[in-house]
Length: 179
Image (cartoon, rainbow, N blue to C red; front, side, top):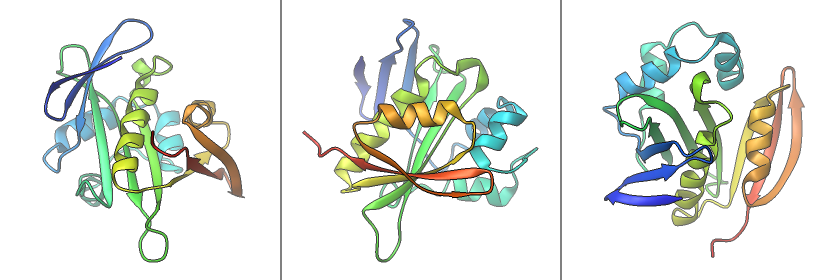
C-alpha cells in the first residue's frame, strides 16, 4: 500500500507490516548510496555489479548519482524512521536507436532482503517508465541470483531470457501497457 506524504515522498507498507519511505534519488545522495553499498554482503555486491567489488570509486559514485529523471531514473528507499537508506533501484534508457528500452538494476541491503523492498522500488520505477514512455526493461542477472529473477517475474509484463554470458544472463521484460 502506497500513500503520498509530500510531493515525491511516498510511504509504503511492506507485506510484513513494516513501513518504508520512497523518493527519487538525487545527485546529492552520495552518503546514502555509500551506506547502501556498505550494507551489502560480498555476494550481494557481486550479484549487483557482476564482479567482486570492495568499495565504490569516485567514478562509480558519479555514475550512480548522475540521475536526470529522464534518461537515468532512480528511486531510493529508507527505513521506517526515514533515517537509514535500505535500497535503491534505477533504470538507464537506451541511447540512440532504442530509447524505449532501459537497463534496470536493484540493490537492497542484506538485512531487508525478501521483505518486499525490491518489489516496492521496482513498482515505483515501472510508474516512472510509463510516464517516460519506456516500454521494456533489460537486466543482466548473475547466475543463481534467485532474488532478482523472482523480482523480475513479479513485474507486470512478458519476461524472457535473451542471452547469456559467462556468469550472467540477460533478461528482457516487455512491460504491460499502463492502465
